[in-house]
Length: 127
Image (cartoon, rainbow, N blue to C red; front, side, top):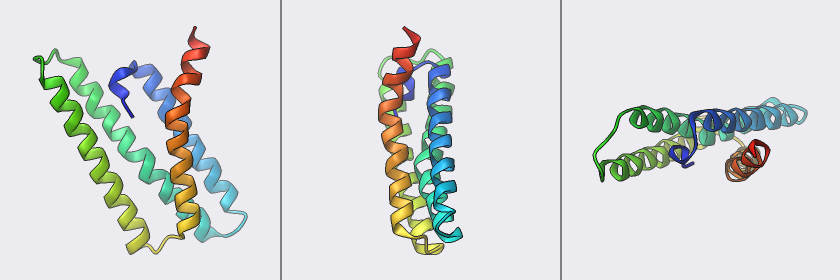
């Protein structure tokens, strides 16, 4: 998520929409079983938590006036950390906690779809 391209307010709305997406999907999977619900929650957290951490990282660096070129490095480091954290969270969910793959994968993909589509929807309502 390129949070640095958005204002902090839009980024917070996007993160809130992502949070609500995986909480609602997890609640729906609770109708099947508690394991599926927990797996969906883990999949949503694997997509949402790195995005939230990246937003904090980007907004912290946005407050300062960095030298040219440092913005690109800051963005690259933030995205790299985001990818590593996502991989670690998915490995922990699947390997350690033995999460069910279907709800984990569906919820992870749903949060990513919200991440892609929500900025366009938010911006269309702002204008």
